[in-house]
Length: 185
Ligand code: PRP
Image 1 (tube, rainbow, N blue to C red):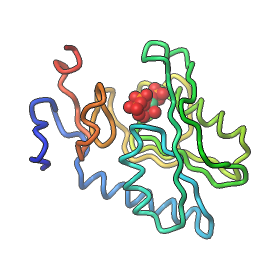
Image 2 (tube, helix red, strand yellow):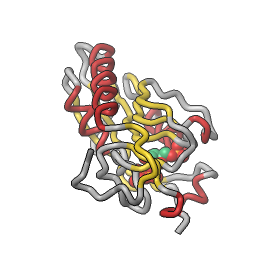
Image 3 (cartoon, helix red, strand yellow):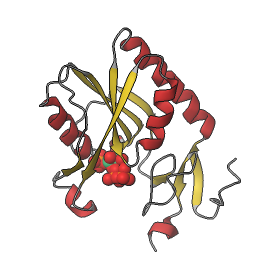
Image 4 (tube, helix red, strand yellow):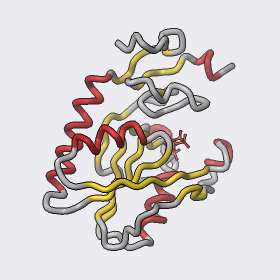
């Protein structure tokens, strides 16, 4: 698998392989397509990590979709615990009276998602739901509802398929566990 990228030295184990991701993405896309049959949906990707999942998800969907993006700053990982975040790039679209689905790669503490849900709800969309490829509930600090979940993952440092460490590994086609010696320096 993925011999074109020399990842073996940095990845401890493959947690979710390409085929598992492909099958789950198709399943979620089909479910969303059924739930929103006859409607148009705006997918809101949260940069940067969600880009890979969003690209595959939208191509597997069977209803008309538009795509927009937000970029969120958390003032660094330490201050994230305070829940203080700000929007670096806002939506280009007006979502009032639209059916909106926030697309995330991973929900960890839930702080980013809670902020986004509150922020986008205030713009009066017709409906607002959340789709996340990965859920790490053991790290949750605030309760959030994820309507469409791909996989629940343990509290390990996961990278790949959009998820990074220091901006690297996003292009791995699977989700893997990073070797501790990489992020421990
Ligand atoms: C990640 C992920 C979510 C957020 C989840 O983004 O994409 O947006 O963290 O964490 P939380 O539930 O604790 O708020 P990150 O800030 O790492 O940016 P990136 O997507 O550009 O890697």
